Amino acid sequence: MLFSSITFLFYFLPVALALHWALPRGWRNGFLLAASLFFYAWGEPAYVLLMGFSILFNYLAGRLVRGRGSLALAVGVNLALLGFFKYADFVVGNIRLLGAAGLEGPGLPLPIGISFYTFQAISYQVDAYRGVVSGRRGLVGFGAYISLFPQLIAGPIVRLSGIEGELGGRELSLEAFAAGVRLFVVGLGKKVLLANNIGLVWDYYAQADAGGLSVAGAWLGAVAFTFQIYFDFSGYSDMAVGLGRMLGFTFPRNFDYPYTARSVTEFWRRWHMSLSSFFRDYLYIPLGGNRKGLAAQLRNILCVWLLTGLWHGASWNFAAWGLYFGVLLIVEKLFLLRLLDGAPGWARRAYAMLLVVLSWVVFASESLSGAAAYLGAMFGLGGGAASGAVGTAGWLVDGRALYLLRSNLVLLAILCAGSTRLPAALGRALAGRGGARLGGTAADGRGGAWRATAGAVLEVLWHGGVFALSVAFLISSSFNPFLYFRF
Image (cartoon, rainbow, N blue to C red; front, side, top):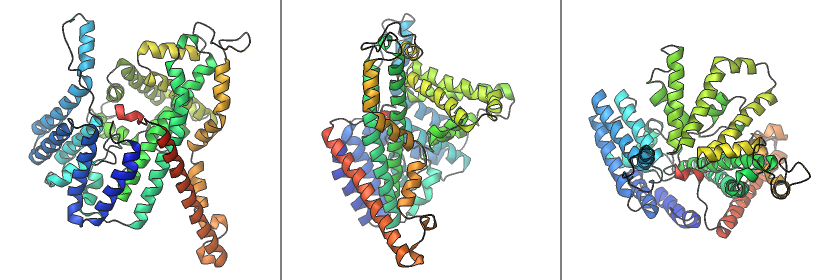
């Protein structure tokens, strides 16, 4: 594991921020590069050499890219490194199933964050070839871009074109720093207070025998993971974007309330947006997009989504998860979106969330057979009554599910509200922004000034309370990995 959460929050992060602010502008990129490599080396001492190779190779390749051949070589080397470390064992394992019993995979642990920083390097190579970014950037600035510690481990995927100016000379401001702190604390609370606690419910059902689950229990577990992965991953993204603001960078948003989507198509416009835009711009469009007829477009969609699934992990359940969404997006494109247009908003949201919840079961399972068994339990095909069954319909509901539901009812209500824009709207109101909605602004005189001050105090107390609670939970827990660390 990288830094423990407490070490990161109270030692590395304050020192890194203080030094970054104290150093002259011309030294900041060098410091960020050194701090990021130190951060990575703390938990991955051997793989920091791989990171160093990626920086040096892509820097030199970016300066030399002149035509399609050199671009293909640069992208190919990046994909080869990713493929070796992430997929070699998967490929060897499948070959062995075909009869090559003596073949052995490398058995190497996956370098943390390699999927993210490899995609950033590829985007740089393609953008340099297209002339979107300069291939003449200095090594230190480029190294800082590839290794930036705020989003190094789990994104969002940042393109050099989005921060090239800030790498060249970013301005630091207390206003941006304060906004970054607020966003960081919100992300920390999402992860520690919400994702970790609802994750305990999923952990119980993930370890249980699917054949003995009641319908209610299986659905409760699936809903728990649905909330866990959203608040875990969006929490990390908020923390990364917030840290970027503290350091003078504007990283792209990665989530836009995806669980309020009214179709699967809209869901993927709102979920992990930096990954979706990467595959769109660097795979779907180069394959031809929708420019070469309907059949080619449908092929391109399936290709993109198969690779999207495999990007998340080297196993067949991830491939199936990607193809599942590819097929759904094709069906929506061909006719279903037109049929949904006439449906009420609540019905469209229920339709989208049902399909998303089912998808997370496949995503979270260790194998296709495990996913099939769990999905079967959700629809009453578990094959047996759950322990602690209630009444004669033991296959439908059991005592454990009722207990977990009652125990987490308030948390589930908070998670439902937190998946919408309601908390952000309340936060803006409490902070006194848009004072007219609250009855005045500082310009209205003493009453307006008092309301603005009270709003600011409430905001500080809110974020301070979230931070204090999060730290208390971190101290009481020994292990707090983000789910996307394994990708």
